[in-house]
Image (cartoon, rainbow, N blue to C red; front, side):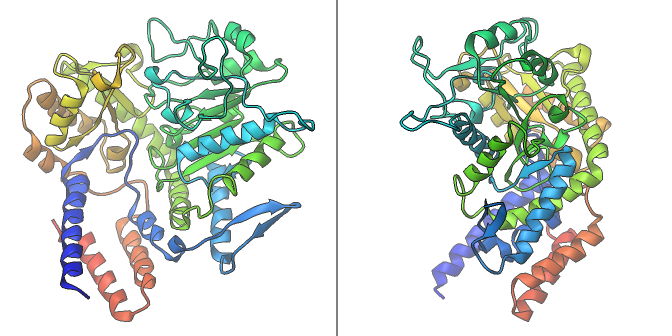
Length: 484
């Protein structure tokens, strides 16, 4: 082994540890699209399946696997599907997508195949005629836009020369809410084949039930999909789209959900129903259409995370919603402009949106917050002309809720945020001291159980006994807090 390899490895580990300690112990992560998985989820991710394949597809009514040695991971995938179906109250779940964007893309690919079923010989393959979704500049998710996963799956509007996307109208008094009044006319005019709910700037429910009533007699009836990437972990307490009329739910499993970075598609599409061929196409567009190796280590982590979600769902979700409202009010009370309607607590999700233009542009304020170890992301608000000159800050309370913060704790955090945003103070040291109060992860197995199980996993990864013992011993030292 060369000295340079060891030196480079030591340097890489040193920098990694420094970042871990800052992000996990000395800063408050308020980015609404991130979370820290539990210790056991992380340990399961590095288990043997992380380097394996388990390709499979349904052929002549039977699930066929193309590799040997996969009995364990086959059972894990089936168990994970059961847990995810339980979480949604869904009959179907496709777990092999490895991101929320891929989950959306396999639905779009599936739709393209679905609308071309029964196509006669010589009839050209067509794209979706029109899609209705949320405008990107009004908080719509990038992956549901023509520049994202919708690319190449939608017809061009001959009048505009652009993809035939029809955006939901928004209310004049509150651009974060859809205005359902004009929707029937838009449906009649454009006849979209797919309706996509969901946003990345997301503080209110979507009118799924209302739109479901509007399309029930349309022929053909549009497919309704809800991209819940940001609010997947709040399914139930926030909104239940599959009960409200949505056909499909997609999302990523690492924002408000407890899991590793993967994607999911779920729905209630029984056999011998009109949409069943769509589900068949979604499965086929997942494999072999979009992925081969679907990251089996993170699949194992997803199962553990789904079990945690199902065990603590109500407690966690309700605390997140209470914390978001408390944080929003505390920020507003300290003179920061909070988006949304104060009459309903500014937000009904985990997100709290700030308007900071009078204190600097969003990117500058976000950098100042980061320098004080409060990690957010800048965000263009509905009246901003460009994301490059954003006037907003997007925050989320989900990760710090999982580290044990309650309403009163967010009150003090709001004071620190105001010190930075309004008074341009450096509060890095105070932030580090305050974060020390919130280092224990909640809504998972207790530390002593997690540590014991994680040590078993880690000790089994490397067969050499001295490695196994050293790993287990070092894990115990780290978990005890000896590493600062």
